[in-house]
Image 1: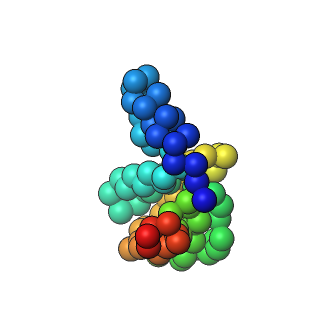
Image 2 (image 1 turned 90 degrees about the vertical axis):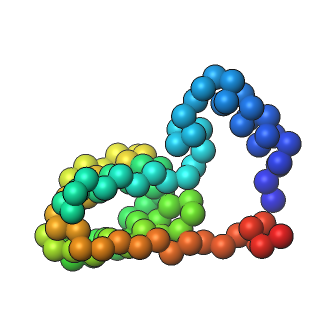
Length: 101
């Protein structure tokens, strides 16, 4: 269970310092450029990688990318850049017990 009081204090500090939300929390940020490039920030890992399918785990669930000639263009600790012909993508959400309350 998360410490809600500590989380609220952290949020107030981040707001006062004007820290962008995508930097201050672990939620992923997905940027799509046309149909040939995708950037995923704040990812946790790569679960599957094929030329036609990539599955990435994030703090909120998995991102499934389908296409052709998919490549991991750049991979860092926090960001992943995918290039190729992106046909579709979807997000499978992870449901927390706290979300149901």
